[in-house]
Image (tube, rainbow, N blue to C red; front, side, top):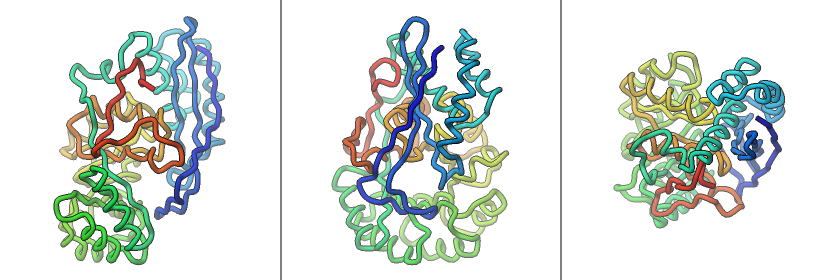
Length: 334
């Protein structure tokens, strides 16, 4: 198996503000695996250093370490294990895993979701993402999303005027649209308890990663009348079955690929929590991979996969009436 990879930069249409900083662009590593039959599978490594602490350079080193085992191994089922033995970096393994699924689908002439499930969903409901830093701009962005057919809005929080921003967004979208918050672990337990006790009146669907860590999440969940989801905390050892949250956000990049994400989802559901998927501002290949995984796991709550529209480029996978259609071409379908 021949490996090739290259960097790619995507620029955001507007600067993206989150608790971990402001993003102006997004660097990805695109991966191609070509078999002896000349068929190529494509994957993507979506490390985001301000969010997960993994740099693009770290991904490139891991991918370089995979050249030898990929060239030496012929059996698809052993390739990922051989790479993992060289470097177990999830973001790099995800790129190889996605490419292998794309390759398998192309060889079979079927979409990846058909290889994962006998009855995959045809479309996945997604939430709109709003990160505008002022109440007025957040309200306008949320109202625009609802006008375009979204039935769920996720508002980035962790700023000084969160109370005003949440109130403005709820007023803009009305009472029947789901509203979830994402703090990216910006709050202490005391801050989260105080804020969520006040914000509960706005009918929140859930609050994602209000605090960071398993003990902190467990403590907060027992104190507030709001459903809690974990995202970054889900990467900690034992988190998937810790029963500290009502829902768990899983990401293809952080899990290490499609196969590992499906295994993680099984663990979460065994614990009694809900599963939904999201991206780390992935490119088209990462979003397509997540859509195929989501199709196999459906039904799911609204997923955070509508992030391609945040970039300057016209999205290959457009959102229509709050849903993303699962590609039906061979492999990833792109």
